[in-house]
Structures are given as structure tokens and as C-alpha cells.
Image (tube, rainbow, N blue to C red; front, side, top):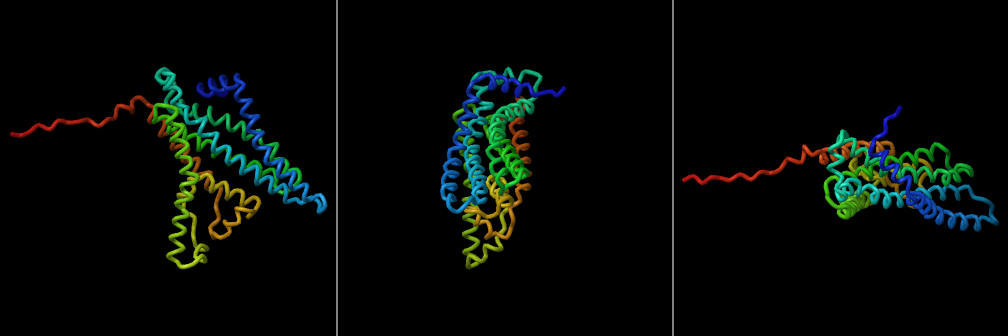
Length: 293
């Protein structure tokens, strides 16, 4: 018999009994479907006299992936940031720590409980992706790889939220810090890389020097990098992805998934270390210096 984490089991029971999870799935699929139907209507109306263009479904696949990525970046921090702070606010964290569960199992359970809701949303979108599989453009393996990347990114962003939640006391502060850090990881690192690119091109006198520019390893902490690299490997350079052809270094989506997995483990360990009551006794002691006469 498989032993389920008690925190995960309790959170799953509570969330499954509420109508909010069903409402969240409904609006998530709705927001994801509206732009797809709009784009499909425009594409099919243009091809009425010219015939069906298979690239329509490739563009639909790209649109679904981009819209889902943006939605996940807003949903995941909201679900993971109050994971530990909500227990503090309800004054049940000390009771939870007094049980036989270790801080590591508590953090892992909170992480999986918040990420499981998002993973459910990801799995619900697989039938929408099947449009591109049925009509051509993408295959089933590519759909599975994209959803696997979304799941790994969900765990990564959830780990950021849970780790911050273990260091602060209120959910409001945890939400602000989590969204701020996620925005820095996704947008701020790209801004730093663009500044680095501008300086590199200025020193080497010309845009042709960008052909020798390599993507730094630290940029793989950005989940958007692996996401773009995965889409490029699946459907090539389409639309905004064309700019990637200027770089000689190929973005490795598997390396991005590996970096995110390692960072997820490190964030879980850091959160469990902070949550351990035995580690909260470290403080800076003030020593009185006696004056020597």
C-alpha cells in the first residue's frame, strides 16, 4: 500500500469537497479556449477560398502553449505563497510541528498540495492540445514533453513560494515577495542578459558578433528560456521565436528541466531547515565588553 503524505492527503480532501476547484478548472479552460477559438475563426475564414493550411494548427499549438505559460505564472505563486503562512495565521503550525512528521515531510506535503491543483489544470488542457495532433503539425510525444515541462516548472515555482512562505509571517507579504521573485526570475534575468548582450555587441563592433554570443548557464534558472527552447525544437522558429536563430548556441530544454529540478530540491531543503524549530535558536548574542581600568 502506497503511503501518502498526511499533509497532502488532508489538503486534497479539503479542496476536493469545495466547489472552488471545479470553478477554477472551468474558468481556466474558458480563458484558454477563448483566444484559441478567436484565432481558429480568423484562420478558417481566410482559408475558405484557399483551402485549409496545416500551419494553422501549429500556430494554435503555439498560442495555447504561450497562453497557458502566462496563466501558470499567475496561478502558481498565488497557490503556493500562503502554504506555510496560512498555518501561522491560523496558529496551527506549532501543532503541525509537534506531530511525528518531519519539517521536510511538512514542506513536501504543502508543496505537492499546492502544485497538485495546477497539475490538474495542466492535465485538463491535453484534449485542447490534441487539435494539433489530430490535424497535423505536432505529434503526441511533443504534447507530452510540453506538459512535462509545465509540471516541472510548476513544482519549481511552487518551491519558490513555499520557501518564501517559511521565512515570512503573513500571507500578504509572502504573496508580494513570491510574485516579485518570480517576475525577477522570468523578466529580470532576461533584462540582465539583454544589457550584457548590448555591452558585448558594443565592444565587438557590430551585430555580427551576436553569432558568437553564448547563452550563459545562469540564465537556465529562468523557466521561460527552456520553454522557448522546447517550442523551437518542436515547431521551429515561428513569429517571436525567429530571433533565436541569431544565436549559435542551441537552448537545451532538458538542461533547463534539470536545473529547475535541482533548484526545487534545494528550495525544499532550505524551507525545511527554516521550518525546523531547532534551527531557530541561532541568534547573534550581544556581549558586554568590560572596561579595563
